[in-house]
Image (cartoon, rainbow, N blue to C red; front, side, top):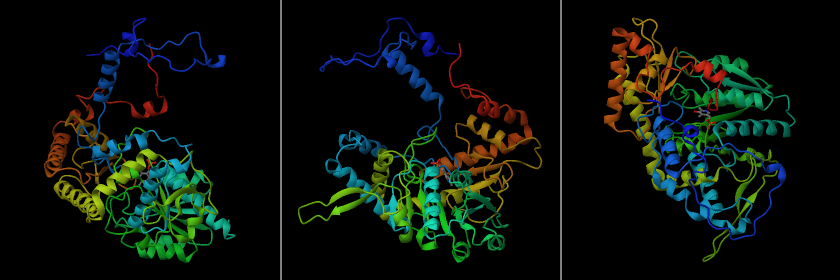
Length: 483
Ligand SMILES: *Cc1c(COP(=O)(O)O)cnc(C)c1O
């Protein structure tokens, strides 16, 4: 059934809002802002509510069903976070307000900086960057500034394992540096021999994701850190997914010099569809002066009765700002509440259960799907979405068919070092029943791939739209409704 869209429902003169009476003098707008004609749909409140509710139901969300999107950590987002972010003191604060009148907000930011330091083993944190990828760019700019300040501007090459997230080389290119690929060995670790031959005086550093995108812990991490440091490079941690490490191991103790966090993944904020995000960057002592501004500091210690005075500061050799104002503040509130609700022991349980759930699923599926690099995984694992006896079936077909079972597909075709990759991250917030149901669906799909491959090729069968030409959708997007 095709339902009428808002433009077709529009009826001249229909109106859905009533504005309160003006209690100030009307101001005239600059003529350049005024138009004779603005063809917006005219609708009642109920038309608009139905329109948006219908759109929301065509979408899939973690609040609607299982969402094992590897490397994206689609965990359940506690609703108490939303309540806190909407408290008037947080929701209505203005970024240009005098900091003395926003002390509660700054206290929250300060505490969050400290907690992220404690969780990661870093010495200082800036909450500015507003996405994981922006955190990476921030980190790379800090590394560049550090080498520059030491008179080593020739260090322009950044080593990146081939199991890394695509944003890593992109961030390096944006910073005007050169990304150099490091191969993985057959266990899924960094190939140490190759690393040693690449390490020289032109290396700015190595960007490492640990656990890597295969969901595997880098077993030679101490040797990797040693190799990078011994040629004068810095070790950057892509900490987008800390779901396996919370309270168990601190990147700073493993030799990482700086890293970013994805608050919207590990620390629970609804995300996807391009935002919102928050990607704070943490650094060791020697890099603290390069952090982007602002960093929240205590300007005056408090007394018995007096709270301390917090302020926004700019580190001495700061790389500058990465965005306007103080970071994506609403997400900082959600991360603060999440950490505060769980406490240290709770955070550790998050990671223990995330790793347990991933290994449980891996064990359920390993006889049905090929899982290369057969060792215990961390918070996610990567399976091959293809079968020797079902030619023509690939990861895409399995992913699309999964939608017919009411579940979101895993991440597909990434990482590139696994054929037809299905990257599965169940997260700690799913029950055993849900994990069993997912494994059952995956096993049924594997049987269907042999018995009725067309069923998979033509999937999804009951989604709002059928199989799309995804390449054409990306290359020639139609972003407006056409008559
Ligand atoms: C998600 C992710 C990123 C990028 O984070 P965004 O917030 O989407 O920019 C970087 N690295 C890894 C490993 C990720 O999973």
